[in-house]
Image 1 (cartoon, rainbow, N blue to C red):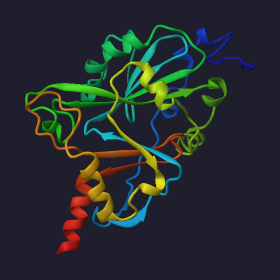
Image 2: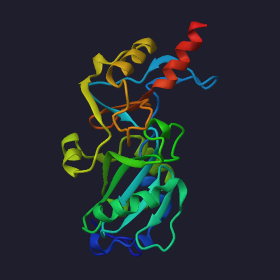
Image 3: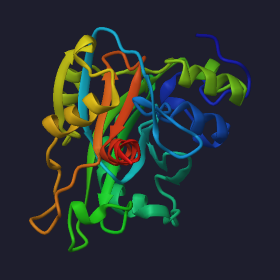
Image 4: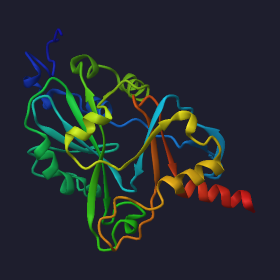
Amino acid sequence: MGYRTGSAIIGGMSDFDVRAVDLNALNSLTKYPSIPTYHELDPRNGGLLPQAVPFSGPVVGSEKVDGTNSRVVVLPDGSYLLGSREELLYAQGDLIGNPALGIVANLRALAETLAGTPGDAIRVYYLELYGGKIGGQAKQYSTRGATGWRLFDVAVVDDLDERLSWPLQQISAWREGGGQSWLTEQQLQAVGLELAPRLFTLDAADLPPDIEGMHAFLGEHLPRTLVALDESGLGGPEGIVLRSTDRAVIAKARFQDYARTLKRKAR
């Protein structure tokens, strides 16, 4: 790869300098793609419409944890950043971190264990931080204030000298269009971190196409949360995330959306 003058990556990936990077570009490159609902949301009332997200081939289902989406971004020089779904909050070595949602306080120790080894790409660990006072349903996992996290995906972002030079609109289109590379399920298991529970891998043809069918499907595959933090949690699950193995298609199915929609239909 040829490097331009003033590049953040000069002479090799170990020379990556985050201080020379457009942080807005870096933030956008490392965000997780948007996750639509499996059945389309009606913008008028928040109910579900009959149109479902089309999947093909194998579909992996995992528990959707009700918390806050968090990122550990391990840079090519071995250092790390911490971020929420939308913002970067902390860089390794900072004296002060953004306290938003407790991400820095809860994930800094983990980030220290993931960082340290230089590489030739950015590796982004996507985690759900939950419990405590995080999210509207923290009590489902603990009523004692316990917090925890689960890894749900890992992306690898390479060709940084080129991609960091893209305008933000191009980066967003690349990200939402499936541009990121992902670890396989086998590779995710090998990372050695606790994963958001994997519930099934099935053929797309076995996904219920209708709202009533998906509501029943959720109850069958996830009657209670599998990530309770202690015995005080109420145990209600939020839903299931559905993903094609290449992440080209991702969707979420939440219990409350289906219950609300079916209640309205029954009136």
